[in-house]
Every structure is written in structure tokens, then in C-alpha cells.
Image (cartoon, rainbow, N blue to C red; front, side, top):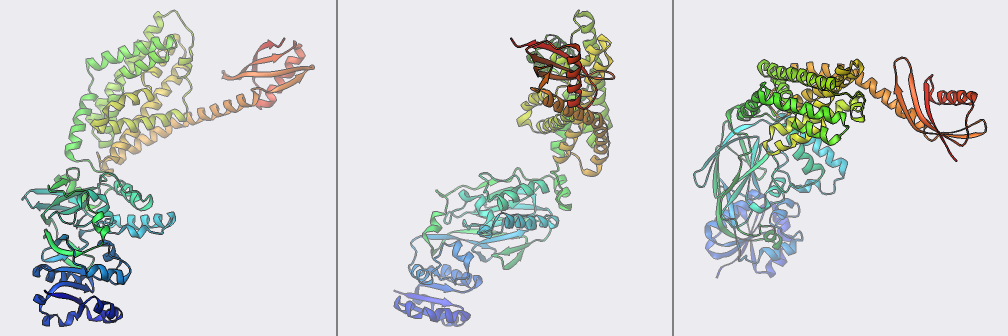
Length: 630
């Protein structure tokens, strides 16, 4: 029966000497690596090793070829090695573990003919190649600084076209900035993303692929990992993985492959997992970190990564701020938007029916009827189509959408006006009044709604959300109020309601265009002209809206100041209630209720008006309703 030999690097002699007595007690014979040529491996049944990572791997290869077990005695400074194999930090405990031959065997990962103990990195993959220990003891500010320094590297990241051939001769092509190959769950950011795919003795290796489609997408993953310290339960959109017994990695340009942070190889490179290649003494925690069950089958999740030639060529130049949609994605959405931009009998029929419902709903003051008209009206479709035309400088799409919108608007105005002619009621309802005071807040609603509409339109899974957008930003009801105003000859009513419609229109077009740009449906140099023009239009519309917002804010201040205000006039206690401000041509009106226990004389009424004007800060007409307390 052979004995246990301890192989160590010459520079580790002082370390070995410190524990020589303990090793002798364990029946271990020490041998420096410089004398390994005189070592008869047939005399050994178990090996121990201390040295650099490369020296340890040489002895591991020797043990594998000889079919004998091995244990690693790490030096205290080899923290990552200790974490990889869950080795004790106390040296005597590490020796006790190492001298005990393991009954369990582990796989070995090879990069060409070199053992990989931790990981092999092809290309650039920040922060996947970092250990999560970089966050230990770091406060929020330090994590934010780490996030910032890592994010700066995005400027130097460039996509490369990869071709992977797995152990079953399946070929996968994609574009990425880098790949991490690993075998064990080693507590790096890469291994933490696929913990269920890593097992020490299943004959499989794993590749984690970093392929950010945009800086925004990359920032999202970095923030979650480095600042919030959150490990995603599913793969981030910028990450994919492949699992197989072997892989050959080819790249469109020669890339450096760094093995265990030191040894450098170059693509093309082959990685191979040798199943249960060696009996290695490791800590119990190492086995606890493995997946619950061996995963016998190959697995892959790379189909969401860019793989077409257009996307690859675009991303090889630089990672854009926003995601770049592929030609296939754009073609599918473009076809749909072009159809919706066209004027059709179905579009006109639905729009006129929606107008009739909305107009009658305004007359009977019914919010539910008006909401029904919002859901039925198809006016949102050509507006979103026009926004894409504006973004892509596609005149056919832009003018097609504009034509449908223009004819649709005229039809709504005429329909509502005709209904007002034949309806013997000329009374403003609260639903009508609600469309006569647009402010900058309505523009904000339109912008957010336009963003939601564009996002929903680009994602088939959430297309049903467009109904909610149609309710959030009303298009037909304000046009119906404008038509009623035309029928009544009320030009102020027509103008203010039409301003609300224009507010919704320009907000939706601008926001939808911006979202389409962020989703990569147009490069910035094409999009900037149309976006700039519509930004100017939005700012022009925002001027009267901001003025109206200032007026609304002043009205709220006045109503708040006067409500529940108490006066003492002619020995009578007077209280104001239900204060409302109305803007008439030339002068504003204050409407309110006056609660009193006695009547005011004409002089007392003048005093009340003067006190109200004093609180308001300007001359106003005062219209009051007296209510007497008995």
C-alpha cells in the first residue's frame, strides 16, 4: 500500500516547516516540486499539494493520470481557492481534510489541455468574472462607486460574433461581449446566475454569455447586482447560458481567453468536462452548494440574444444607449402600423359610432357611457402609426397616419355638431366642463399614455393594455365637446376642448416616438429630426397649458383661503362655504354660500364684498347664496 506525499513549491518551504511535525504525525512525506523528477508516483496512494494555482493544477493532472486521490492545503492568502472548494481557513484543519482521501469524485474542466479550477473568460464580461465577496462589508456609497466604475467600462465593450459547437455537434450563433466558462458553483456573479445548472460530478460544463443590447439594459443588471445586491431569480435579458459536455468557441475576431485569471489562450478554444476525473478532498459545504440533482441533459438559453447579421454588425461598433430592434422585429411592427394608418370603412364606422356614444354620454352626464366610447374609438391607432413615421422619417407612414387623423377629427366634429343641432338641450354638464380646462397636467398624462401605447404596441404579450391607455388619455370626448361647442356657437368652448385634444395628440406622438427609439426601432441620427420638431410643437402647446395650470393653482389658492372663513359684519357672524372661481370675459367671479343667522344690509353686503376682494387680492364679482342658521 502506498503512502501520502506532500508536494510543495520551494518558496513554500517555511510554510511547510511550520507544520512539519504535524504532517509527520499524520505519516506524510514532504517533497519539494523541484525534486519531482525523482518522485516515483507508484509509491503514492494519496497526494497533498501547496503552491500557486498553476502548480496545484500540475499536481492535479499528475494525480488524475495516475488515478490517485489528492487534497489541497491552501495558504491563508489563497482566499478564492479556499472559497471554491470550501476548504478550512485554519491550516491544521485544512491539513486534516486534505490527508483524508475523498470517496467522492469530481469532474475536471479543461481549456484545451489546461485544467480550469475556477473559470475561463473569453472576451470582456464585467462583472460576471468577479466574486460576490467584492461587496462584503461595503456600504451603499461604496457599492454605488463600484457600480459607476464598472459602468465606465461599457465604452470599451464591443460585441463579437460567436459560434459555439456543443458536445452533440449542435451549432449556435450569437453576438456577445464575452463568455464565462465554469464547472463549479464558485460564488462569482456568473455562477450565482445559474446555480441549478452547476454540479461537480455530472460531466457537464456551463457557459454564461454576456450580451447587453443597450447601455440601459446593462445598467439595469449592474444596478441589481452591485448596488441592490439582488441576485435575479431568472436570467437578465442581457445574459444567456449553455450547458454541455464540451464546447468549441469560435469568434469572428481573435479573442483572449483567460484561465483562472492568469493563463492566457486565444480563440478558437475548446472546453471539455471530464466526468468524475479525480478524487479531490473538499469541504462539505462544497457539496451542499451543488444543484439538488444531477442534470444529465444539455440545456441552452441563448435564443433571446442578438443573432442576426444586422444586429451583430450594429453592436460591434459600440453598445448603444437603447436597444436596437432587429430588421425582423421592425418589419413585423411596421407592417401592423402601416395597416392601422390606412383610412378604412371599419375605422370610420367605429369612430362615428364612438362619437355618437360619447356625445350622448356628455349630454346625459354619464362617465360610464363616455368610457365606453373611449374603448370603441380607434383614433389611437393612426396616431401611434404617425409617431413611427415621424421617428423613421417615413413620409408614407407619417402622412398616411396624419390623413386618417385629420379626416377622423373632421368626422367627429361634424357628427357631434349635427347631434347638438337636433338635441333641444343647451346646458353645460360637469362632463363637458371637465374638458374645458386643459393644463400642463393633461400633457403629462398624454406623454405617459403615449409611452405606454408604444410599449404595448411593440410587445404582443401586452397588446390588451391598449384599452387601458385609451381610457387614460381621452381622444374622442374632447373632440365631441368641441363639436357641441360649434353647434352651440360657443367658440370658447370649442377652442378649449380642441386644445385638450391637441394636447393629447402631440403628447402621444412625441412619447410614442421616444419609446420606439428607446426600443431600437430607429437609430438616433434618423430619429433626431422628427423628435426635435415634435418637441418644439409640444413646447409650443405647453405654453398656454402652463398658463392654465398657473390659473388653476391660483383658483385653488383662492378657494382654499375663502372656504370656511369667518367674518363679523354688523354684529352678524358670517361663514363662507362652497367657494368656486369662474373666469368671465373682463372679470372673474367668486361664487359661494354665505351662512349667517341674520340679514345683511346693503352696506353690509358691500363690506362683505370688500373683505372677499381683500383676501383674493383683486377686484372680482361676487355671487352669493345666503343660507340662514335658525
